[in-house]
Length: 200
Image (cartoon, rainbow, N blue to C red):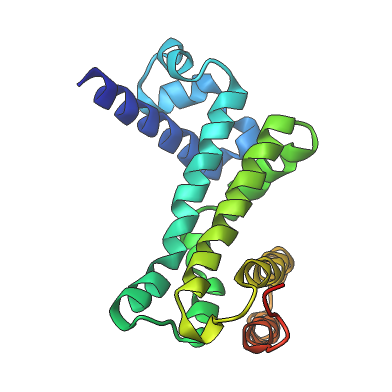
C-alpha cells in the first residue's frame, strides 16, 4: 500500500513539474514553485526527488511514456489484420498527435541539457532507442517488411521524422508546412518501399 502511494505521489509531482514547465519554461520551474502548484511542501518533493537532475530524469521517462502512445493506431491494425498498411505508419509518424502527447518546448528544453549533463544525455539516448525499437517491432510484424533490415529502416525513418519535426517547428505558413510535410512523408515511403534495405 505504501509503495502504491509513493508511486502515485511521484507521478503527481512529475505531472505537476511538466504542467508548470509548459507554462513557465523548464528553466523557470523550481521545486518551490512545484510545491506551491501542488499544495505540497517542497521537502516532500525533495524526499522523492532529492535533486533537480533526478526530477528531470523522471520527466524524460514521462516523455517516453507519452510518446510511445503514438504507436497505438499502428499496433491496433497489426493486432487486427496481422499486417500494417504503410500509409498508417507514415501518417501516424507525421501526425500532429506528437504535439498533443507532449509539449515541444519542454522536450527541447530537456534535450538541450544533454550537452552539459551526461546522465540526461544517457536518458535521451535510451528514449530515442526505445522509440526506434518499438518501430522496429512493428515493422517486424508486417509481412511486407520480410527480408529487410528493420533495425536500419527504423533508424533511417526516425532520422527523417526527427529532422522534419525540428525544422517544421520553425515554419509558420500553413501551406508551406503542408508542402514540406508531404515531401518528408514521401522520403519515408521511399525508405519503407525500398528493396535495397536488406538484412546484412
